[in-house]
Every structure is written in structure tokens, then in C-alpha cells.
Amino acid sequence: MDNETRVVSSTRDIAAPAETVFELIADPRRQPEWDGNDNLVEVIKGERIRAVGEIFAMRTTKGNHRDNLVVDFEEGRRIAWRPGNEGEAPAGHEWRWEVEPLDDVTSRVTHTYDWTELTDEARMPRARATQEPQLRASLDRLATLAESLTT
Image (cartoon, rainbow, N blue to C red; front, side, top):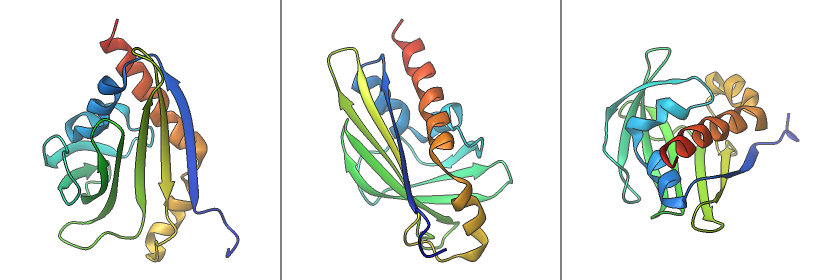
């Protein structure tokens, strides 16, 4: 398994302004609406993300509490977080979103899952199963939601 791909990405153009798209990503309360993994139920704590170092918590469909540490943030352009069990350090995988305005009404969005630092064997099967189609499902749901807000 040493040669397995541990960073996967998907990119899609969305017919919505970058600000609209980014607001949906940066607000943990909205994440269950566009989560293509069908893994998120609700936000436990956390408001709209504004800076590196913030933590927001989500409840998963399995009832788990996941703390998410924001590790990269540029307003309107880029956000990344690393999940972990409640009260623990991140587990070594990262969800990243990059939003590029193409014009006033269209955005190019790239979603990346990076599990190069993941060492928890219990999380490996799910990490291996997270591929481009799962990332694309989140992008597609995000596009549907963002585009519905601009029509």
C-alpha cells in the first residue's frame, strides 16, 4: 500500500459568485446540506469560520463528535480543516476547498482530501474509499445549492 494515492482532488465550475460559494463552505451549519459523503448531521459548535486556529465541531451520521481545526484560511478563496475526535489532536487528514472567481457570476472550486499524515488504522478504510467521485458529489451538491441562491 506504499504506492497508494493519498491526495485526491476534484474541480468544478459553479454558476455562482465566489462569495456565495465560499459562504456556504465557511459556515459549518450549511455543511450537511452539501456533504457528498452523507457523513454530517449537524454542527455541534462553531460559527462562520474566519481564521486559522478556529475549531468547529460536527456530529456525524454514526453519532460521532468531530472537532475540526482550521489549518488554512484566506477569506473568500481558501479554507482547510483537519478533523479529530472530540478534544483530541487532528487525526492526520485534511479537507481543503479553494474558490477561484472566474468572473462576477462563475467560480472554479477545487475540493481536496489529503490523508498523507493519517496513521489511525481504524480510519484507513474510509480514507481509502474517499476518491474523486465522493469529492465530486460534494461539489455537485454545493453547486446546486449555490446556484439556487443566485437565481
